[in-house]
Length: 82
Image (tube, rainbow, N blue to C red):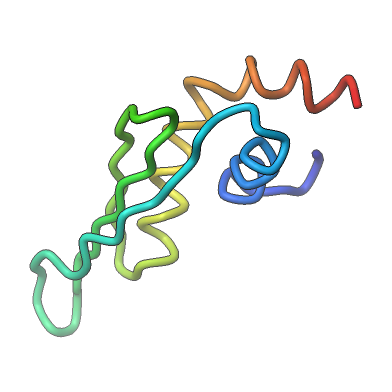
């Protein structure tokens, strides 16, 4: 699992059927033309984790990091045991 980001780790957890993981792209939600703000929601078994950033990729990563922070220990136990 070393070197993987939170999005990759959550995708792996989803593939192993450890949780239902989904993302909702809320799109651009403000900011100036030169400094946009995008928002994404990461759902883990229906629980929401919100992220925002200067682009969709960064917003998704921030949301995934929040989700991994809460659920990562539970997922890692199974993922490391494989």
